[in-house]
Structure formats: structure tokens, C-alpha cells
Amino acid sequence: MAWNEPGGGKDPWGGNNGGDGPPDLDEALQKLRSRMDKIFGGSGNSDGSNGGSSGSSKNLVGIILVVLVLGWGMMGFYQVDEKEQALVLRLGKYLDTVGAGLNWNPPLVDSVTKVRVTEERQYSSRGQMLTEDENIVELPLTVQYNISNVKDFVLNVKTPEVSLRQATDSALRHVVGSSKLDEVVSTGRLKIGDEVKLRLQTYLDNYGTGIHVRKINIQEAKPPSEVKEAYDDVIKAREDQERLINEAQAYSNGIIPEARGKAQRMIEESNAYKEQVVAEAEGESKRFESLLTEYQKAPEVTRQRLYLDAIQEVMSNSSKVLVDVEGGNNMLYLPLDKIVQPGANRRPSSSSSDVNVNRIADEVINKLRRENAPNTRSRGVR
Image (cartoon, rainbow, N blue to C red; front, side, top):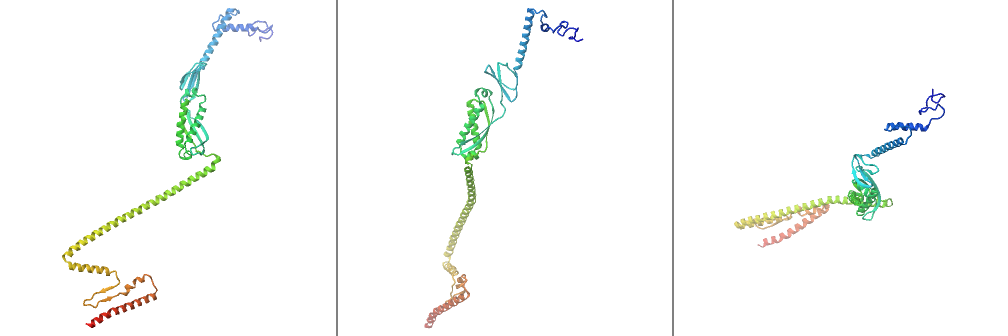
């Protein structure tokens, strides 16, 4: 039979009201308190006396305190990863820097700040600046950095990333302002990157930011859009200049060796001519000495031989031949073919050549007659 049916049994709270009304709530709470006191070592009295009520209240407060202490202790455990370091502050004052692993610090007393120290961070910047030769250039760059000192990074500077950006702009403008446009856009970008890195790291160390700059990547520099056409004209003129210089250098490389070769050839020919002249002179002097020796032995014969050699050398270049006949009656022989031979080189016509030959032949015959007439008279007088 159900407890709430007429004539039912006891109610679930342990009362026996006979079904006349609702259960007594105070009596139920008293019973629950009595059971809790029995569990935690109470007197177990349910009469509602002051002594029992005071003991149960103290036990309940102790339980609450134990639970709170356990929860407070559990809140102090924390895990630090391999890429992190933890900065510990006790009551706002620096206490320690801990590494990777499981650590414990009293909560609400110590504050822990985790920082990723090995993470490669990156910051990009782009701006227009003026070079040393008063040219405007737009230069983008990327800064790669990490955290080298957690204490300085967290405590020394309020916003270290903002300080990094401002220091980067200052270092970049200082280096670019000391460089020319050609160095910035072409050959000097690596050098500029190294100088910016060194100057930026100096700034960050002076500020005490705890940031270590790993690398500065300077991308391709571009002129502002307002002056791009003029900049393209400058680039084209520079390319034309390089091309002309290369062509001139190629021409120089071709003409100079040729000139040097000609000069060397002329020097060699001069030396050969010198040796030839010296050798001929030495040969002539030796021949003269040998001839002198022979002349001293037989003067008449040597003199006659020299005379004949000289006459032969002289007359061999002449078109006239003189025949010496013993007993007088010298006869002059004129070879007409030798006389008219120089005129043959001019390739005259056949008619003019015959006229010239006939004219020369007549003149020669008349001359011979005139020369032979005195000789005939002299013989007749004898």
C-alpha cells in the first residue's frame, strides 16, 4: 500500500503522521544533520541541543577549508613546453625564470607568464625613403626574430613589438639614406641588409627588449608609382650605358692585341734587318781584308780584276754594249730591242711602235756614219 494512500504506512521522512498532513521539514533536516554528524564523528544527538549543533558546524567549516586548500594547491600546478620559458613574479616582483617541465607556484601569490622563446617570429615593413643621391625608393623588408631574454622582454619594455617596428624603421632609413640608388636596387641589397641588422640589434640591446634579430630580408626595391616612368628611363639609359661599355671593351680587346702583334712583328723585322746589315757589313769587311791580302801579293792582276768586275757590274745595267777590239776600229753595238723595251710596258699601239723603232734606227745609223767619218779621214791621212 502506498504511503500517501489512506491507512498507509510511514512517510519517507520517518514520521508517522497517520496521513493527516504534510511531513515535518524541520524534523527531516534534523535527521539529516544527525546522520552527517555520525559520519564525521559527531555525537549523533538529534535533540537539537546547542552542543551538538555547534560541533556539527565546526566540522562542516573544516571540511570546506580542506576542500578550498586542496583546490588552491591544485591551481598552482602548470606545464611549460619545450619551446617556452615561464617568468614567475611573486607579489609583482621578479622571482625566477623556469624552463620546460611540470612546475608549481602558489596561486594568487605568484603570477606566471609563459613566453615562446624558440618560436621564429616575423615582422614585415614597407615604406618610402630618400637615398643619398636624392632619389625616392620604396623598400619592403622582413625581420625574423625570436626572444633571447624573457625577463627583459616582459618587464623592461611595455610593448616590445612596437619598439621593434620603430627601431626597424629608424635603422632602415639611416642605412638607405647613406646609400645610393644603384646599391639599393641592385648590387648592394645584401650589404644593406647586414648593416640594418647590425644597427637594429644595437638599438634593441640599448632598449633592453630581450629580442634577438635572426635575419633581415630586403626584397626588390621599387620606385613610387608617381615616378615609375622616369625611373624606367633611367634603368634603360643605364642598360644602354652598360651595353656600350661592353661593346667598347670588346673592340678594345680585339684591336689592342692586333696592334701589339703588329708592333712585335715590326720589332722582329727591325731586329732581322739589323742582323742582316751587320752580317753583310762584317762580310764585306772580311772580303775587303781578303782582297787586300791578295792585292798586296799581286797588285796588277788584282787591279785588273777589280776593274773588270766594276765594268761588268756597271754595264750589266745598261742597254748599251761596248766591244773593245784590239787594234782600234771600236764598234758600238746598240741592241734596239733593249732600247725600246721600257716603252713596251706602256702597251702602245702597233703603228706607233713601228714608227718609233724606225725613227730610232735612223738616228742610230746617222750617228754611226758621223762617228765613222772622222776615223776614215784619219786613216787616209796616214
